[in-house]
Image (tube, rainbow, N blue to C red; front, side):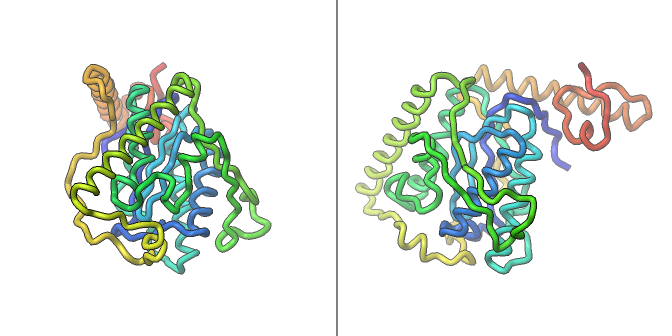
Amino acid sequence: MSTPRQVLSGRYYMLTRRCTQRQFLLRPDTATNNVFAYCLAEAAQRFGIELLLTQQMSNHHHTVLFDRLGTVVEFMAHFHKLVAKCQNALHGRWENLWSSEPPCLLHLVDTADVIDKLIYVATNPVKDGLVERVHHWPGINAVGLLLGERSLLAHCPRHFFREQGPMPAEVFLTLSIPPELGDRDQVLGALRKGISEVEGEQAQQRLATGRRVLGRRAILRQSWRDSPSSREPRRNLRPRTAARCRWARAEALGRNREFLTSYRAARVAWLAGTPIPFPVGTYWLRRLVGVPISS
């Protein structure tokens, strides 16, 4: 059983999930790009999630989001379920699409941490040696949507959803910078600068080593059944909090320890038949069992 997570409204997160066996089950093509955009936009609208940036890689995705209402758990369950069902129907698969390990939901504490992850997400294809520039990636051009203040129209995948079903015929994938994060122009300026720096650094490394990028054509020729030949690190840490400032990180980790201590004490009392209120941020027991929550 995993450690309980405190779910509070008004938090920024980076959500990551990988495909089973690292297969290229999200490899970019017209149908897959539409599936990913449609399912992400529909889930975000359904649960009031504000999307900042997303990157659909061939065998995983990164999505930076703002959870204004405290619904991130429901959002990611719904989103991942829809993508898995649609992609399995598209490829004629029946087994699990996502890896058996749980999604990585990383709490981003400060504005600087959000900007760091925006740059990380945007430049993921460049740092992985797949393309030279961010906009060369053949998946959804989410960076262009965010910087250009544009929306992407996605259509309901008819290879899975029925014509007269309850799902909307089309949705718009919209990315934005919440006002709570600060001045929009400054945030996007920092994002542009970070992208330019990473692209320049990677170009210098390729020049020094003679290494070349894989390129759009080779990416599009890959089979969705394939997987990377490189070895993936195993048994590494799975942090739940990211904070550049050591004091902010210490404070966030301290709040999490307090939550876990209170949660465990309340759970022991609840199982003993002498319930006491659970701490604020308790999610599943409040939702499924209706345990009392401290005010």
